[in-house]
Each structure stands twice: as C-alpha cells, then as structure tokens.
Length: 327
Image (cartoon, rainbow, N blue to C red):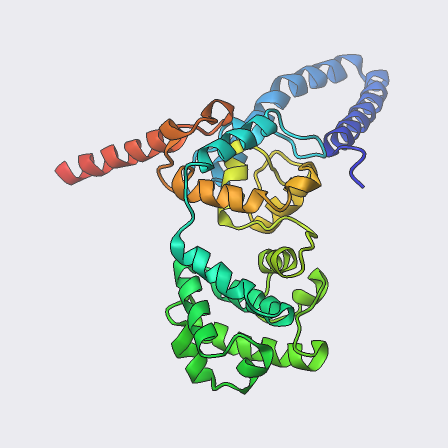
C-alpha cells in the first residue's frame, strides 16, 4: 500500500498543477503577451513568501504540550525511515540500562503471570482498562486489590457488586466509569467468549472503555500477537520531538496517539513494534519528560531537532512572569 511514497505522490500533483498553469499561460500569451508576462512575474514574486507564511502558521498552531517544534516538522511522512533512527534507539537503550523497574510493577506483573491462561488474559484486559489516564503504581495497586479479593475473572466481576469494585479500584482515574465498564466487559466476555477475551483488534475495540492503545496492548501482552504499535502519550510526544512522524501527506506533526501509531508503522520495522513502547515510555518518564526534558543528560540529543528548545522556552516564560510580578 505504501510502495509509492506520499512525497512522490505530492510531487506528481505539483507537477500536474504546474503543467496546467503552463497551458493557461500559453492561452493568455496568445491573447496578450504583455499582460500574461506581467501576471506570471507577479505570481513568481508572491508565490514563495505566501507558502512560507502558511507553513509558519502551521508550526505555530500545532505545538505538543508547549514544546517548540522547529526542524522536526520538515520530515514529510512516508514509507521512508527517518535518518539516524537506529542510532537513536541504540542510544536510548543504553540510557535505559541504568534504570530499574519499580518493585511494585514487578510484583504486579508476577501476580498476573501466575494465573491460568484464560484468567491471565482477562486480568491483562482489566488492568489495561484501569491504566487509562492513571499512573502505573496506582493501576498496579488496584489490580492487586482485585486479585486479592478474587475479582480478576469475568465470572467474578460479573457477579460482584459495582460499589465494591469502585472501592477496590479507587483512586484510578475515572474509577466510577471504569467500574461500570468492567462489569459490562465481564458480561460480554462471558456471553460471547466463554469467559475469555476477544482475540482481535476489531473485537477488542467494541468493548466499552477500550481504545486503540489498550487494544494493541492487550493483543501484545494477552495474546502475544503484535498487530500494531502500542502508542501512549510518551511515545506520541517523543516521536514528534524526534521528527519521526507527521500527518499523512503533510509536514504537520501528528495530533493524536492514533495518528502517531499509523505514521510510525509506515516505516518502523515490525521487529521493533513491541519493544518501542516500554523503551520510549521509560525514556519519557526519566529524561524526555513532558515539561523541562533533561536534554543535557540525553546522549542522542545531537539527532533530536527539538533538543534544548523546551528549556529556552520555559526560561523565557519564567522571565516574563518575574517581570510582570515586579511591575
């Protein structure tokens, strides 16, 4: 599907537009050579500045969490891989070697691994639903409490009182809605899948509270079947900062994790689809953070078109705040 790059398609479109413009100009010349010549000269003078102004507006209007986006938006997304991506991943892996996983996360993972296959898959699905807009240690605590109370199976949750589920999963984000969704999911899994979970992206997306990120995560962890890349806010942010992704056929950065997933899958080798998420999530929590990233500690900053931009931007805001306070 992506054998012909979007850039090549765009080139052909521009070429056809130029050919059409040339034909029209010839007709005008036959009518009035002088008027056509002046018109063409005027278009040539005004054409380039107009595009530059529009591109500048695109850059200003599409900033991710206030992070200055400059050279990164020059990459037109296609099936071609960005330069130095292998060196960047190697460098991030080296930095991640010195970071240890939190003990609570390890304990949570082991608790799920000890369950029978069908129960383990449902536990993965339930935990993934709880993880949305919730910190990892909070999700892990809620999952462990459900496990300790025997509520990590479709049958048990289906029979359980919703108020009890709310108390056990609190304080995960939107715990009231998630308790309701868990009840609905459990009922669907019992009726349609004999207590197991769906085994395809399409079916998972039909469950309440399950979006593309959760669906791909469940397929990878629950079924050991990578149908796509699991993209969360960290992967979304970092890929845009590195200039690895852009909206299809444009120079604009992606505006949602789902757009990032689709753009990233166009060029990233399939063997990297699974490890890219935990790698960039860990990197995004420690170094390439949403605000004030530690570019000075990053060993791949020479490949990052956005390096140090956030620090200067934040410093400028801080100086303005101090000036206004004095006045």
